[in-house]
Amino acid sequence: MSKISKEFKSGFIFLLAIVTLVYGLKYLKGLNVFQTNKPYYAIYSDIDGLQVGSSIRLNGFNVGIINDIQLFNENNLIVTLNIDKLDSVPENSICKIVNQDLMGTKGVSLILGKSSVFSFPGDTLVSSIENSLQDEVNAQILPLKNKAEGLIGSVDSLLTIVTAVLNKNTRDNLSNSIKSLDETFEILSHTMVKIDSVVYQNDAKISRIVSNLELITSNLNDSVSGIKSILYNISSITDSLSNSNITSLVNNVNKISNNLNSGTGSLSKLMNDEKLYDNFEKSTAELAELIEDIKNNPKRYVNFSLLGSGAKNFKKNQDN
Image 1 (cartoon, rainbow, N blue to C red):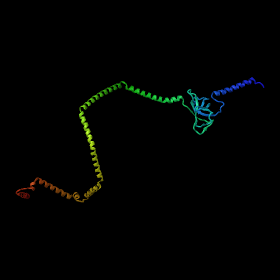
Image 2 (tube, rainbow, N blue to C red):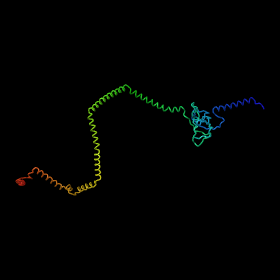
Image 3 (cartoon, helix red, strand yellow):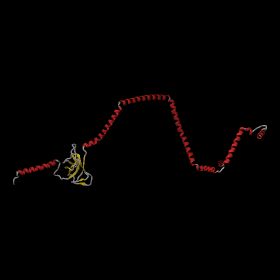
Image 4 (cartoon, rainbow, N blue to C red):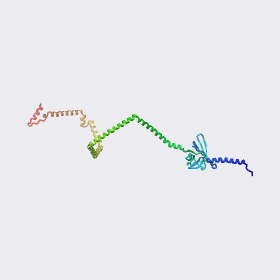
């Protein structure tokens, strides 16, 4: 058997070292060169530091790695995900870039969907990215920042008002107002003393007034039953009037009015016959004159005499 030349041995060892180096580098990157390649794809506008070899986890369990990241166009990146632990993935599953530790190491969290339709290697999955710690902090601090700005504005307005209020003229006016209030309170104090004195001096009168008011209210309470009785009687009267034959009374009045207007009856003739009215007026005038003459000359009509001379005098007066 011929001996292998040293050149061949050297070349073989060099080639083996290169292959070992290439596969070693891939292994160090997390790429298992001996596993089955099942590539899925996801498109991101920002991978937020995701690198080739980053792990893909499902509920904390490693199901694959990132094989490749390429620029898809000017604004998007296409990421190749090698998910070798799953045969199929629901089509509405989400590949979400997340922080895998406190150091900010990026990875992909696979969130399986509930669709009955499955994606297979070569398909594109839905992409998503978790908010960074800075975004979370900003989301929490931004409302506080807005409130602080509003509070600072309010404090500034308050300081402006206080500055305007505490100028010399305002301080003088405020001092005068306080002085006026003190005088007012002093006057009120004197007034209350006088009122108290008046009440003390007229305590008996006030007591009698209160007693009289109590008596009045008591009488009113006692009169409530009488008032109720009066109201009940008024109600009974109105009910009687409403139930009475008012229609018949109105018809009779209308009948009398028609008779007067038509000239039927003595009263209608008296009202409508002018001659009869004139005679009646003349008779009443003569009767009035007669009564007046009787008042003025009673002896002319009545003359009492024990000797019987009254009749003669009356005849003489008649002859005259």
